[in-house]
Image (cartoon, rainbow, N blue to C red; front, side, top):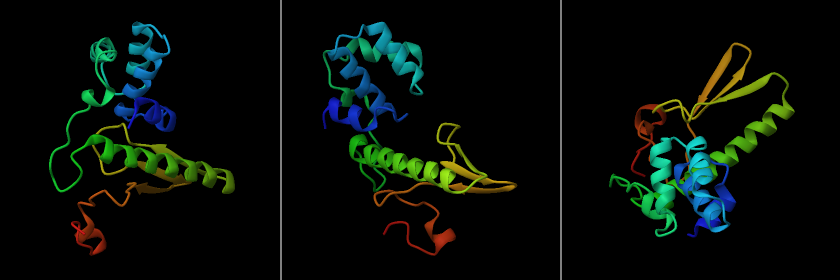
Length: 155
């Protein structure tokens, strides 16, 4: 998948792959390296130093080469085939949350995806009630499926 495609579809996602792709597209459009590095730093979990290192090499290497390989645990090893669908699924879920807020007064949500490693992606809030949500797509292994849902996590 090209950097242009990833940036066009997920350019506002905080997934580091989308942000590196966006930086690569910016460089191709003539944005200076420091501006691209600062934008990468501000829109991802990367340090400014690492952002500068990546941007410094983006003209010679494709954005995919900067993505960490996934561990082989029965899921996709390729970060593009694993994280791209996950980011799209989260984006769709966010759109639905925004629609829910418009349709039902008093509902809000918190985005918990970047608050550390937890099983909660979003928390839907209405008054004193809170509903933690872990967004999954068909390619995601649900670790607690057996205990929480009575389902085999491998299926």
